Length: 188
Image 1 (cartoon, rainbow, N blue to C red):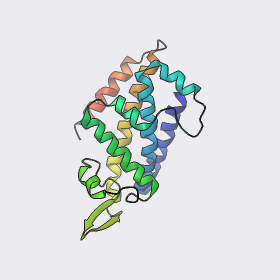
Image 2: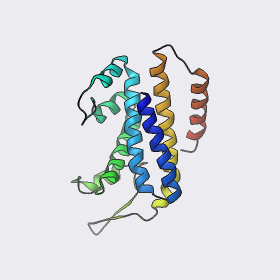
Image 3: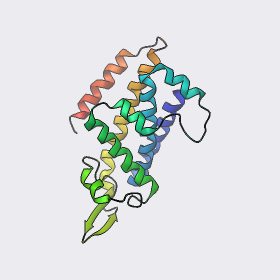
C-alpha cells in the first residue's frame, strides 16, 4: 500500500509540473495512472483478503483484477459507475493517442459521455466526417487538477480503511479530508 501511495504522490508531483507547462494531454495520461492506483486501493479496502492477494500475485504484466470488475464492486450506484467508466475510457483513449480507432460506433460513445465528453480533446462530427483536435486543451487544466485532488482524497480514504485493519486510525485527518472534499464537491 505504501508503494501505491508513493507512486500516486510521484504522479501528482509530475501533474503539477506539467500543469505549469500547460500539458493537458500528458496530465490526462498521468491521471489514468493515478485513477488505476486509486481504484486498486479502494478495491483492496473492500476486502482484507485482497491485500494478501495483491502481495502474492506473481504476474508482473498484469494486476490480479480487471478494472471493470473493480469498478463494479466499488461503485454500486449506476450513475457513479458509468461516470467512472467514462472517465477511465476517455483517459485510456488519450493515453493511446487514437481515440477513434477502437470504436465502431463513435457517435453513440460521444452522445453517451456526459461529464467526461471532450475533456482533453475536441471531437466533432460534420457531414459524416470525424474531426479530432486539441483546441482549448489548456483550459482543461483546472478540472484536471481538481480530478487529481479527488483521486488523492479517495486514495487516502481507502488507505485509512486498510491501515485501520492493523489497529491504526487517523480519525482527525480522515474527518478533515472528508470536510475538504465536501467543500470542493460544491463546485461540481
